[in-house]
Amino acid sequence: AYPIGPLTLHLDGGARFQADITGQNMSEIGLDGSVQTLGLQLQAKAMAAGYVEGYAKMLVLRGGAGGQIDLIDAKASVTARYGFDGTPPLFTFSALVQFLKGRVYAFMDFFVPFGWKRLIDHNLYSWNGHCFAAGAVQCP
Image 1 (cartoon, one colour):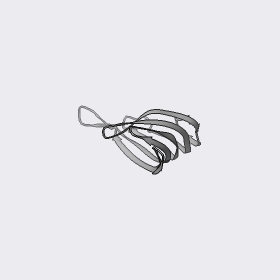
Image 2 (cartoon, rainbow, N blue to C red):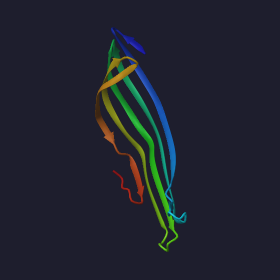
Image 3 (tube, rainbow, N blue to C red):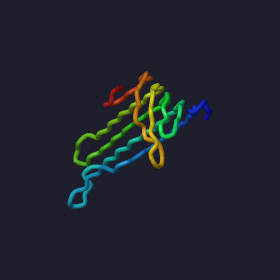
Image 4 (tube, rainbow, N blue to C red):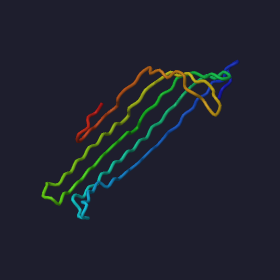
């Protein structure tokens, strides 16, 4: 923080990371206890991003500009199913990976109990980065 007259100039930055994988059993069992189909679905997500913001603060208001870049944003899904009734096995795969998607923005925040609430978040410039898709999904 840098005091400049009645204002305080701040510079903040940070990073966030997230990863998640979920699995779901999609097997079907008949009323007599026999297994009709065996099925499994897996979904995975991974994300990493960084940001920097510069702003002036005065009592309960702060405003400034910032930039955010998504280093990676990836999603993948795999579904496999095998039926004991003679139907052919099913296997599907889809994936979407975006690199270096980002934006530069202007903002204004208002102080509320326990933190800041964003009043204005306006994109000044944004870009889609590089995208790769496979399976049933397409790049935006």
